[in-house]
Image (cartoon, rainbow, N blue to C red):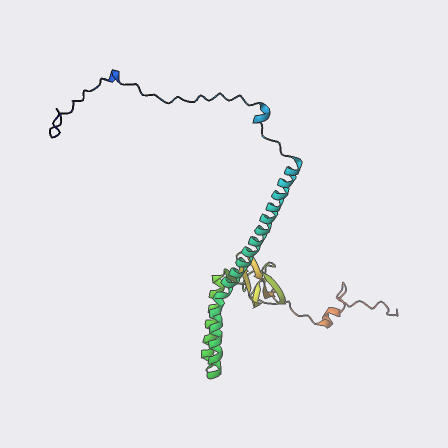
Length: 224
């Protein structure tokens, strides 16, 4: 009779050798039937129709037209900006000249000292030339130079014993250049050389003496 209080010991588990184990079943791979080779008609791209070609060309034309309009707007804006910047760069140096002119005007009202006003005007002229130099404008010296029709505009001729003919004696307005470009020629007075001796009009009209030093008889004189 089994004692419920003392159960019998459990039987020991004996390891089963690997050979006796049932082999695991591997899932079978599905076999895919080989694809049939495509024919030339199936592989070649589909030729677009005439309507499709026309639609593509129309879209391309609209795209190019929009690009061209945008390009024109960009170029116009760039030109306007460049012109505005050029004007600003040109006028900026002359703002100081304007300040000097304003100060000279106020000084002339409050002072009667001509010498101080003259010095103020000289400072303004010097500032003008500095402003010209900042934008590349240079004056051209003409007095004492040979007359050059590219740089000079002769307004008068004047005889001179000391200055050779064709030389600029004085200038009425100065010439200016921007690089190699002449902005304005100088208006100058040119020497015509040494003055010619004046002759008496009566001597010029007098008949020349004959071979013996006698005056020839007039043609209408009556023979005696």
